[in-house]
Length: 166
Image 1 (spheres, rainbow, N blue to C red):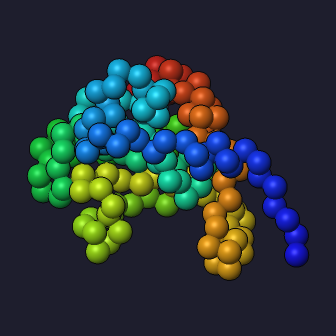
Image 2 (image 1 turned 90 degrees about the vertical axis):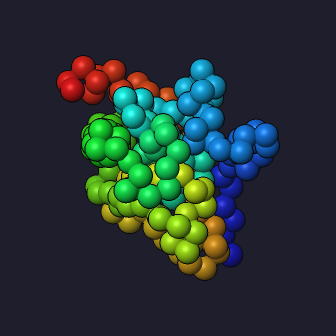
């Protein structure tokens, strides 16, 4: 049997997920006043992009409306349009910063669909050819080759260039 030694993972494992007093993280994190600490990488008018703290792959972003809603039909047309613009921006950002080969983009609506937080949010997951191996299937373990802080830094460095092209 081979041993895996991703020593840096302990920092991720022990990192606080969000303060325990935070009952609605998707509405409270944008109010912190520190986008790096909140892991917000971009803000639109009605929606924002945040790194998923439980990512499937490095760069896994969530597109989240600022206003707490559960279903698409609760969004105003302007909120819906801005949410989609953030998803398109996320794809451009991840392409520029991480150069993935493809994307999985989608929404989990309701707990039966896997929605763990009752606040509408979309997932933008960068994918690379061969990025999955036996570990998730046999070992029930996902290997992430980059820390959330390093990913945030790489994405934040690209945002100004992309915003200038909007």
